[in-house]
Length: 90
View 1 (cartoon, helix red, strand yellow):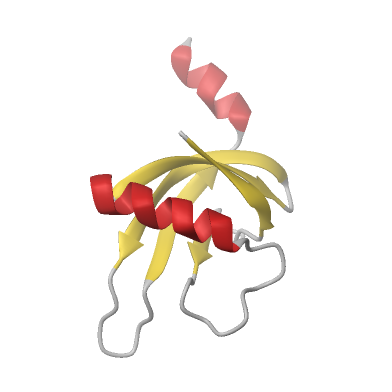
View 2: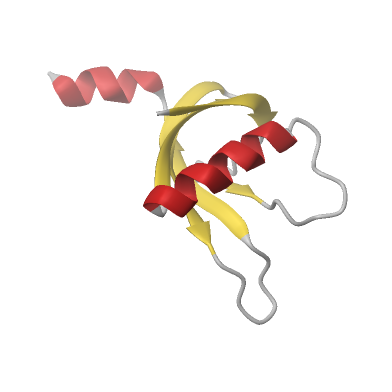
């Protein structure tokens, strides 16, 4: 599991999108996180992550989405709260 060190903003549906190609990274987004995500996704196509968000600690899987016509290269996935992990394992 990859631990991201930045603080990221998730959408109300718990979807996280990280756009690495923008000129100025959004507040809380770290270049070191983008580099780590790139390396993991090259090897596996996706990666499990631990992320600090505006709601606190969350987990999920991010997938690399290659650019198409008007869409930028991005990492995208849905997150969940840690208590879900405990509930799933019991």
